[in-house]
Length: 448
Image 1 (spheres, rainbow, N blue to C red):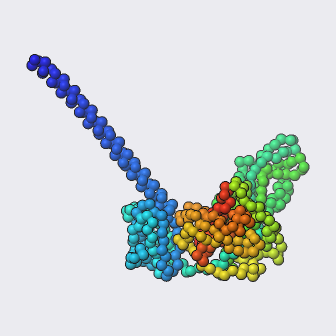
Image 2 (image 1 turned 90 degrees about the horizontal axis):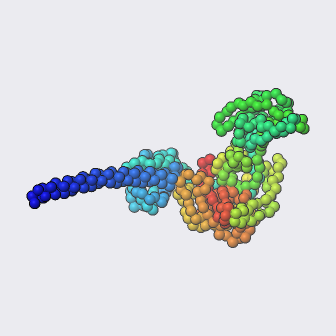
């Protein structure tokens, strides 16, 4: 009995000891996995929090000097705002001015700028980690005249723009592509054999003069200047070609958004891009001209509507000089002919923090006269990531819906007015719902 018990006890004890050791090692592995998961989750949460704050808060704020501005941004996480300069004070509605406050959720806060200038506000997640710097500009109150009138737009490119390359048929009947791999869509040809080019006709003339001799082209590709060489191909009609499609001007109809008190104007709310390359056209010169709207094709699901009209090109019909074509619109100086036509009163500029979901007005001349139509602002994106699509709105005015179906091509630039202030301009239409559209903050146009 004793021998049996002595044998059974070690066997049993040994088995228990091995089982406990296995559970101990398994527990350590589980704890390691748990801590890895916690650490990974923390990093993921922190990364998302930083990304969210960076994309929810704007990079830039304008506030009017001496005016107490109340702001509210949809924040999911508690954050600390800290001003780096004493010229701008932070605070909650019931607080005394401070240089640092803590906000979360839909908390509002206030900014007061005592002196015009540019200042910095830091945003810290949970008050610990700085995730963003916001530039706060203290400005004088700005007044502009909202226009809403159609204008003809003509742009002359800076150089000759390459919109694509293709094959040409030589005298031997063979198809060749002399420009392939040498020129790209979006290149601007500025010179040929050292000679400056004003238009595509000069390029065609110079290529034919060169004949089958190799030519050197000075081109601009983005911010880079370079030279390339290629040999023109003689075609069956006796002309010489480079195998490149080019364009030197762009024209169309749009809407003038505003004119300031000095006669400077802004139109469209987005840049004029080449229809083939999609790139914003880099211009040498440009002008506004009188235009007459001849008809309107109403928009429907999947097919945006369009305003059709005639542009009158002559010295007596020029309305202004275009000086810039940028991502946020077309800008320049109005002539006396245009200034005399604008009878609207100047109103204050409303900055992004003043734009809110709710009723607003869209000013347009689609009916043949300048009128204000009712719209509803559905969504406001206060971040700086969508500069031309910061406002989502829906046309609610029965007259405008009956006339156009909502937003049609040619209405880009139509002013958006809310609470007596110019807050933005129409930029795009929803392809699947022409009653809805996007708008740009007017401050993005003014800061072009």
